[in-house]
Image: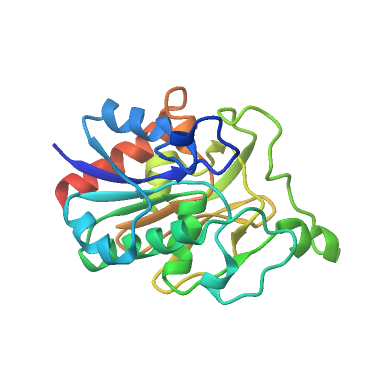
Amino acid sequence: MVKIGITDDIFLRKARFINDKKANFVPNGFVRVAVKHNALPISFPILPPRMADDAIQMVDGLILTGGVDIDPKFYHQKRIPEVRRTYPARDASELALFKAAVKQNKPVLGVCRGMQTINIGLGGNLYQDLDVAFKKQNAHPILEHKQKEDGSIPTQHITLDPNSQVAKSCGVHPFVNSRHHQAVRKVGQSLKVVGRADDHIIEAIENSDASIQGVQWHPENMFEHYSEQDQLFADFFKRAAQN
């Protein structure tokens, strides 16, 4: 059975019970899709970076999940006021897990924040806030990437490179959800842009053999009703099984 490490999010809101305070948890969509495809989900809590190599040795592939903003210090930028809540311990943990996965040749899939983690881990950076970068600078118009609709509902079509592995899974013009205020700016080493929204915001990245993939949307919220989003995971699990 293929084993998939899935990075935990962290409960940072005010907790009613002590055991909920800064509790680590895996968003349940990732668990459900792994189990559906007979992949064993293994929760990776926020770990000290020194444990990353041992953690990755336990699994066949790694999923980097969504969550709060990454602290700009990890991509050598000064924080602007529009950056929201961050948790640097998670940033350090996930960057170490990603680098360990690359070193051990384990496939990686990054979702939303996870795609941004991949990009930073390979030397790229982010737009800290899309409104600041574009709307407030009177630059080219951008779409609304912080959808008001339920997170399981797609709200925009994107365009994928037909030669990319993401497009082979999802088609060239998938209909996706959109819940982010940051995005990839400078693309990291060995990565290529394989998907953009109609406003040119980067929506998907991968490396030459698709062992590293990142998507800016949330397929874990859509896979049960949209077969192309399910296929994205199925193909990732297949790559992990062949590793």
